[in-house]
Amino acid sequence: MNQKFIRLTRAFALLGLGITIATGVSQSGAWLSAISRVQSATTIGHDTPHQGHFVNENIADVPWTLAPTYAAAAGETVRYELSTTAYAPKNEKGGLDDYHCFLIDPKLESDRFVTGVYVLPQNGKMVHHAILFRVEPENVAEAKEFNKNGEGWSCFGGSGLGTRGNANVGASDLENPGGRGGAWVGAWVPGAGKGNLPAGIGVPVKKGSMYVMQIHYNLANGLGTDRSSFELTYAPVGSQLQAIRNQNYIAPVELPCPDGINTPACQRDTTIARNVAEVGAFAARQSAGALLLCKRTLADYQKPVGDASSISTSCDRSIRADATLYSVAGHMHLMGKQIKVELISEGKSKTLLSIPKWDFHWQGNYWFKDPVQAKKGDVIRVSCVFDNSANNRPLIGNNPLEMRYIAWGEGTADEMCLSMINQTSN
Image (cartoon, rainbow, N blue to C red; front, side):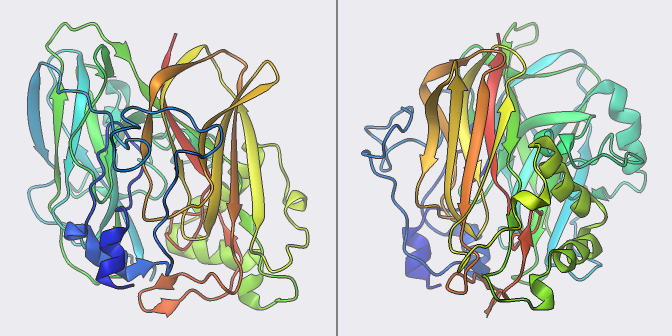
């Protein structure tokens, strides 16, 4: 992929509270050139049917803003360093991805609300994304045990808290990747900047809590070191805000090779074994967990796929309590073709997000112009379409990805079908 194309393409942006998308390459350009798909830039037009209405849709240079335009709330901003020394990402099992968690003690002396998140990656060549998790006071001891060497820990899939010794992890944790011991505070991806939440809303953090910053380092562009940091804006002590949280909604991913191709790499067992070898048994439980959550079996996906250029999946998940939905995002990897997120209430479907021409390098968190009301028992449906054909082989480094079976996984060459919704409970 040439630099002209990268500059024309939105930087890869993903997840979290209040992220801001910027055009251009900056530090993330080197990573984008290392893992890329050769295609033209995608534009979503105003005429996309049934698309939701988002903040600033008429003045942004794209149809809907990828971040809220809210002014910074009153309060204090504090900067936190992830470590006192530089971290050297690595994957001792030979893979190209390193998910590493850092423990940070904010030394909070009272309950607070976070109203703004700003992650500052130091090495843009390696930092693929970063997610900030909250560690509840009752889980701090476990987090300290994870961090007993003071250098953090490997954490594919989430913070890892609450997961050790639990054979069922991988199912519920797909919807709560912070584990039982934490929840999202915010996130960063290439192109992201400062993000502020709407007035009256914040992420609650209890006195005595800590933070875990999970950083996904991609090693396809070479090795190096990183000393990233982040800033949080806190509402004044004693503020009474409505708590916002991120909820994930997923669908299984099972992508066979085109009909008639039966090489070892095209066998599901080969893919699961490779992922387990690279990241641990968690990889197998993720794939099984996605099927379990969505009440599906492998038989639902072991059907002829033709040239594998249009493989569909979907999942319905009920909303657990009345809620106000403030933003929606979608996420797939390099085989993604389309994604759609719907709210189904009383038998009627309302499209929250529809991206008919998926582009891995242009993703974002879409904030509704008017928050959406949802009731307990309403359904969120996530639908994805993938292309695992011979004509769609992404470049990993300088080499096209081999034809192979693809399942749900943490690596960029694996796949996901995922929607993230920022919501408050009524």
